Image (cartoon, helix red, strand yellow):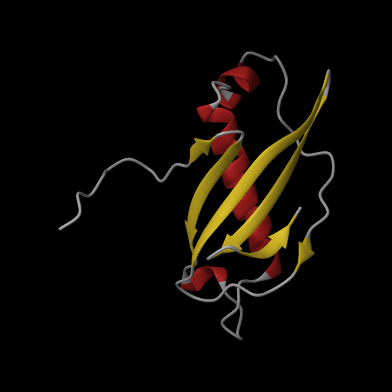
Length: 119
């Protein structure tokens, strides 16, 4: 039997990419059994927050100290194929550009190597 952890799910870095596993639950789906479109953004946000945390950035401490926040300025998502109930997904994130007041992150939600959504 696999060892069960009490720790929350977290991703990992693989070279320059951050990989974050996500399971599709009933609450994520619409009446057709496919993931509701807005939930892909939720998956991407979880992955982004995890990537920052694993990279040593404490978003909560930064915000509470009044030093700013990591707000999203813009998002454009392209949907390619649906995810379904109980699918095991992987959100792959990669920093594309770093500027003084912002970071551009490319993210893909994938299932078995197939890109389902991309931002």
